[in-house]
Image (cartoon, rainbow, N blue to C red; front, side, top):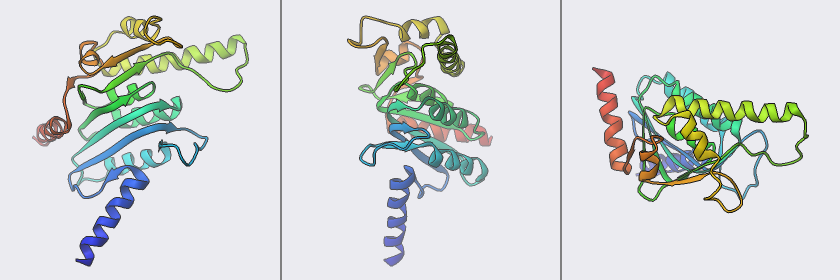
Amino acid sequence: MEEKIEEKKEQNDSILEYGTLENLPDIKVMTIIGEIEGHDNLSPSAKSTKYEHILPKLAEIEADSEIKGVLILLHTIGGDVEAGLAIAEMISSLSKPSVSLVLGGSHSIGVPIAVSTDFSYIVPTGTMVIHPVRMGGTVIGAPQTFDYFRQMQDRITGFVCDHCRIKQNRFEKLMLETGMLSKDVGTILVGDEAVQEGIIDAVGGIHDAFSKLYCLCDEKSK
């Protein structure tokens, strides 16, 4: 009884600290929630995903021969571009099969993370917001600044288009759409719209995601 209580406590601590489940021996479940935190700490009251937690966990998954695959659950508003791209690159470079599932939403820099897996799902009411790179705070109005913004945008666009079926010119058109967001440029895609655009592979839920992941794991083992 005490062992079960201790195991449950360790599981809860793992979810609170890292957003992972430890009690599935062959599959690792990880969550990307809230705002993706970069080098600056967010408010303690804000829901966030810390890249310094996610990256070591992904390295651990790669090194652990007992883990056969990883499921990424996404419900994020986006956040730090560099941190988000680092997470996406890490997931895409795993040798283990991976599946992502977009739940409430995977916005902004959450888009590259959603497409970084071997297969991606979105629930029917899930959303994805595609828009250009934005930066808060003071921005120096110099050519070098705009070159940096363009370079960062090219990195995001290139990654997304390399990891899903959408073409670059179509992705850029969605990104620069002016008629959908009242105070911004960009596009909101809901459920099947993200599939029709070629960003997400299929509409589905948690059962579909687990079934696909186990299928990929079986294929790899053969």
